[in-house]
Amino acid sequence: MSTEPDGYDPAKDAHDSYYAAVEAKRVRGDRHWTKKPPPAWRIVSPAPRIAALDLAGAGARVRRTVLAQVRNVQTAAIYRGDDCMAVIYFGRHGWRRTEMALSIAPSAARHMGRLVRMAQLTLFAMAETHLIVARIRSGNHAGQRMAMLVGFRAHGNFEPGVWILRKERHGCNTRRWIGGGGGQESGGRTEGATAGGE
Image (cartoon, rainbow, N blue to C red; front, side, top):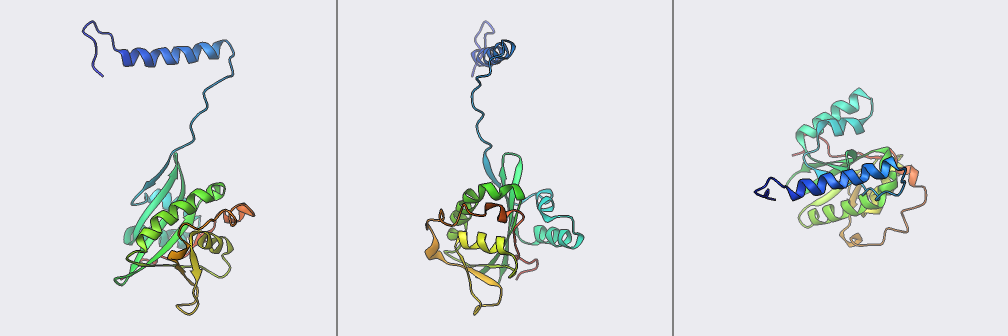
């Protein structure tokens, strides 16, 4: 916005007037404030190394594996404001198969519905041209539940421990899955996206 010839800047005046009013409310003890907007969601790709390491835990072996994945496969980090909620890894195996892995922050449990929907919108677009799979340990119940919410199905005949994304799950109602036992997802991790995929 241009400044007027006499030096008056309407934008600066509006800015200063707003904060003067806020300060006046604070001084008189007014507790009625405009509600602060919720933190914005954003996706950063490739995922910053610091975000991947933050979700990797303290184990040296896991941290080395995560660093190798960040260097060798496609990654994306999902942020809510300044907090990283999840890091996604996509490893290519051959010309058509893409293996996905996911690291989730414990604080992401209460935002599971949003994360599931974001995953569906991304993965089902990728599934138009690629077979999307994920390796999930049999004891990783949080990872299995997250995979089912997104649309993955266990496929023992394909390869033990491998779950395959089923496109017919796209747009399904996940509300019946979300809600009960929400805390179980905290720290859940879907294994996969190994480094060095062909």
